[in-house]
Amino acid sequence: MRIQPHEIEVPENDPFNNDLLGRRETVQVLTSIVSSIEGPCVLSVDAAWGAGKTTFLKMWAQHLRNEGFPVVEFNAWETDFSEEPFIALSTELTEGLNQECKKCADASLKESLQKKVDEVKGKAKEVARSLIPGIIKAAAAGVPLVGGVVGESLVALVEEKLNAYEEARKSVKTFRSSLQNTASTLAESKEGRPLVVMIDELDRSRPSYAVELLEVAKHIFAVDHVVFVLGVNRSELAHSVNALYGDGFDATGYLGRFFDLDFRLPKPGRDSFIGALMKETGINDCLERLRDRYKPEDASKEEEDVLNLLQAFFVTPDLSLRQVGQSIHRLGLVFASLREEQPLFARMTIVMFILRVLDLELYQRFIDGEASDLEVADAVFNLPGIKDLRRTDVGDQFEATLIVAIHDKASPEIRSQIGNSEILRELHNRRSPSRHDEMRQLAYDILQENERLYGTKMVGFKESVRRIELLSTILTEEVQSFLKYKATLNQAFGLVEAQASPKDTP
Image 1 (cartoon, helix red, strand yellow):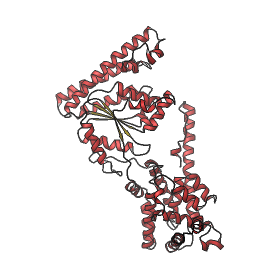
Image 2 (cartoon, rainbow, N blue to C red; image 1 turned 120 degrees about the horizontal axis):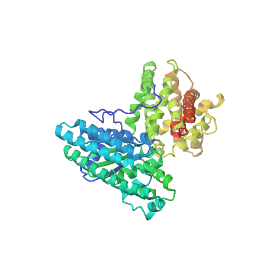
Image 3 (cartoon, rainbow, N blue to C red; image 1 turned 90 degrees about the vertical axis):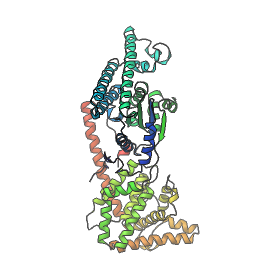
Image 4 (cartoon, rainbow, N blue to C red; image 1 turned 90 degrees about the horizontal axis):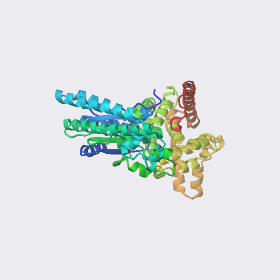
């Protein structure tokens, strides 16, 4: 079984076949906008990390191709090993244009277009040969060599550098002219559809590379019939700008100069996404075996409660789609590690796992007996997107399972009173008899259901925690081993020092 989720496949004939987030309508709207653009345009698709930008751009790119648009895809993060973003972008662009030439059915048009693409490639080499830090940016933007910020930084350059600037200015101008000519010819062959260049993972790149790539795309590649689409996290990209120019720099205003159109990717519903992941990870299979082995009516209720809990509590915006995907894959590993004869304790495992994902520190304090069930419930139901769950059926299931977990930790003489539940004590002190009795009964129902289902009076708290922590230890050891191996390579070959990303650790 995979620890990390598979990348979502985007079939050529139906880009939305595996769309779990309902992106078709958004793609169609943006396609209509792009199809109406004649002049140069830079469009940003803004969404948080892990919100599905990459999959969205892949689906959109394939949809555009199916609609007859020429498309070039460019991953900034995979190319930021290059010191010069112009070289990386121009290389990927000319390669993409070559692919479009191969698709051309008209022989004369194909020959004409290929000549233009070859010319673009040649002009790009001329620009690349004149690359000197600061000069290309100044030449592309029409900034005078003397005077101003750029002039002050280059004032000490000798005559050779002045000549280099003039050469760069001319090569940029001829490159833009050649690209414009090629884009116009390509648009004519595509019934006016512009060339769409999609740049993804810009906000994950080195700050200097990300900013320079933006500047190159805007100043050098911005010609008629070319539309740039940038998948970005605007807030993170602003941090990259500040890292380069200083915290006092107006990063938001600076970025506004580069984007002609801004589009915020709508937040999707997660129900179908979570349901598909449960099927993919084998969790559904485990629950189905539960149905086959035990009383169907009891097992079906537990299966339904598990799905409802995941869908309800993984809706918080504090968790990205990527984090949800990784978490459910790891939950699948927890279930897959069970022997067939072992009781599943599905509800308890799910609640403990949800708590671990939402607040690892609080989870640790709870299993160590340092936090009460009431403290956990108050903290969880105060999270964004989860506040409204309290006093709903699924919220009550979560609280009642915490009460049952406290029961498992209680001494034998007080277990008949549902242990040391602060939730029930607080309801009693508030003189809410109906609510107290309701939650108390719900906790007893879970205990009785456990006994009917698994034939044991164990509530599964300790066993569920043991399974989760055993797997977490294995995963942590795997991550640390990988980082040690990577650090060894770094030391041997002088690569960048390896660091663990908090989002990648279990």
